[in-house]
Length: 323
Ligand SMILES: Nc1ncnc2c1ncn2[C@@H]1O[C@H](COP(=O)(O)OP(=O)(O)OP(=O)(O)O)[C@@H](O)[C@H]1O
Ligand SMILES: [Mg+2]
Image (tube, rainbow, N blue to C red):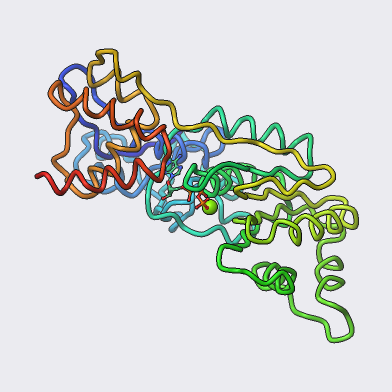
């Protein structure tokens, strides 16, 4: 069981708290059957205030700061202790239970349940899955989130290799070696060192932003996959690598409302593009609310921007300008 508390907006009919709910679900999924985990926010709220905590003699074990499988900032977790509850459990099912260098994200991840399921399926059947679509369409974010969720399938974890700033194909292998923290061996080429390391390991590598080095990435990926039988790769690229064994996945736009329909604010918030807009607008303007006056404009903005995450984030940041 996972308990978390956070903001939920009252929209006149229902509470909307997508981010809070998503975090609560992650806290829950870190727990084992029979274990009750409480996030720091919920702990602070209930440790002194709740009647039951006093009456039933409940206490909390501090489990430390943990990275949940949502790639956003770590969260302190507590386990509920009480005389009727089991006390000892295996290690928590969190991101830090496996080796990885997944970068922390500063903003929340929205939606994409269907796409993540499809990418995971693709990864089960193929050893190279390329997320290929236009700039700003959410390739990196989707790849990171999916990698975090499948980390338990890889004994040697998940490794993120940022190629965005790399223009020289000769440095590709060395960049991967550095990201994986492998030491160079003097008598071997960089590629031999890399292959030696990866050879028998169950490991997932995320090659991010391959578009500038498509051919080099295609060649190296082919060689790595043929020498290392348990290696899998997710690549993100504006164009496919076009190499053997590649499964290309094109990311669709975020779901969008129809600008010609009338929606209530809560109907609108079911669309991913609208949720992303609201989340990012709240970052610059905490008073931002969807209401009957702005809902039509919001539907129109999201659909005119074709549900492209980057464009929606940029538009949402400007809500501040009209305060
Ligand atoms: N599902 C999502 N939830 C929240 N934010 C998202 C989501 N998808 C994308 N974003 C945000 O939108 C922006 C663009 O996404 P991202 O960087 O993943 O796109 P990209 O396709 O990798 O772009 P590029 O081709 O430039 O590498 C980022 O700020 C990212 O955090
Ligand atoms: Mg990217």
